Image (cartoon, rainbow, N blue to C red; front, side):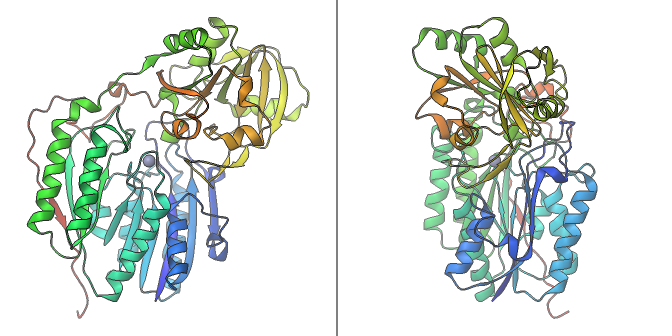
Length: 498
Ligand SMILES: [Zn+2]
């Protein structure tokens, strides 16, 4: 059996003005994309290792992935799409297994994954296709119609990406071997989460537990995923979406289970609203309590696609909370370049940050460059173990008590391996700021008191800040008292024998 394997993976922030471009992507083709070094931490890695274990012949196509960011440049996406189509046309395969995200857009194509799958279907109407999606993907009609098998991540922080890749490949092999014709069933609940979005605790954990029990109990159920939807998009399919892949039309038990989980989530929707501590509150704690703190900058989470250029916390630390040894990342390619080029430079009044996020202003810093760093490291995890990060040429400027880390690409410092690679000692700091709202906790809660703080920026959870239209009505922006849970069923017609 021969399976064409590929990856197209990034999460797009519709409202960010920093488009995602070629330099943000890690791209590999052919044999390079199947090398063990390329894909740890991704669904692709799980697909490849399951294929190796099960003696399935892999036909590599293209792998392209980027950290979340603004819309992908159109030409780049069209180039990726035609590379996939060419690879598919060039070879005879029994099926296609893709590691996708589910919330990627280009400047003009709002549903990239749906568009890509539809383009593949135009060329290969009957070929079995299995996809892995991030649980923050948005299962649009084009995705649900064109993919035969959909496997979403089940954990947040995402620690099961490789397991989901393996599952997706094995289900595809089963489909081909046993000539199955899978069916997708989706239930959409019109609400967004602004808190309690971890999968292992709180109300979501119950929903995931029920889904796992159902997968074990119901023979026809290949996968039951709960998609939480990326917030910073505007698509009618957004919300909390349950997607089941079954080997034939969903039986009563599958529909009843999905409806029960959906009803329970809807009933609990108010529990998914939350507020976060203020920066000054947490800085006061950091002053009073004798242990180091990590602050998650909720308004500027680069793993949600923001640029990482907000300066609110930096401003507070420099103006009102002097006396902390602290570490603050900020995206500013011009300032980074300037400092990078002049070794041992001591910039005076260097404006940093605030270039992209609306309403943010740069902060002036003065200090000495103490590190020049190529911005590259491999994640040690637990979240993101094996993932290679590239923040571009970056510098640490020591400004009194504050070390300002200025990057050429959005900062991704949410891993201890970064501090090691940059030769910084975490023990030196009382306050470490992360442009992260979730994943830093998985990687640092053994050494730092991790608190997510309320800040302004393009990933603030004040949803009324965003120009949502197509996705409305949606709770909590709109009061919705009652919903009717109606499963949508997606089957593909066959052209065989025509
Ligand atoms: Zn995600």
